[in-house]
Amino acid sequence: MKTLFNKSVRLFKWALLLSPFGLFVIICLDTYIIIETENQTFQNVQKIQHNKVGLVLGTSKFMKNGALNPYYKYRVEAAVILYKARKIDFILVSGDNGKIDYNEPKDFKSDLILLGVPENKIYLDFAGFSTLDSVLRAQQIFGLNSFTVISQKFHNERAIFLAQQKGITAIGFDAQNVTGNYAVKTELREYLARTKALITIIFNTKPKYLGEKIAIQ
Image (cartoon, rainbow, N blue to C red):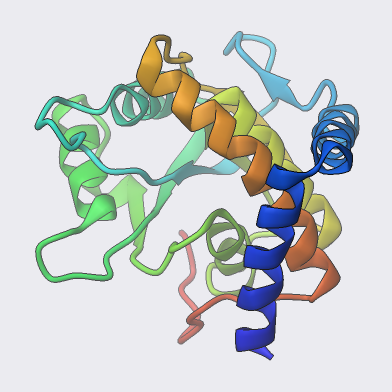
């Protein structure tokens, strides 16, 4: 089933990229997700409601050229702002730790602590290999049926959409957006990521790993 899913994703991506109809489908899917998540992401910390947990979606700390990844930097800052405004009580960082020398959650934790978040208020999910994994593991491993997603707006919209399909109540706090060539490439990839999100729902895709439940308290 997993092989079939991966093959379907690849074929669908190529079909979308190579046909005018594909572009139409991409635009429709993008618009659909925007409409479905309208008024559920916030830039103003004073206007967002309180949730027990803020789910930070992981990304690499550094870019390929060695520079600090601005997406990472702004997500850390957004999480700190939300915590210090008492709009969340705990922070759950979900990211990739697929290699010994690569640990997104640990990097986030170190910088969150440096910026004043107490260590005992930070929980780590080392198996957030995709946005879907992060959302579903927040529910199935950490027992959360509602939370605040912390990432850039386009990423929050996709995460909220996935959460909605699984009966999870999620809102988003938008980290500062990124501009420049690096941002353009990321946002172009987001169109295909949204297509993949729909496919994961159709195939009822499960997280890559589950495991023992962890209570956030």
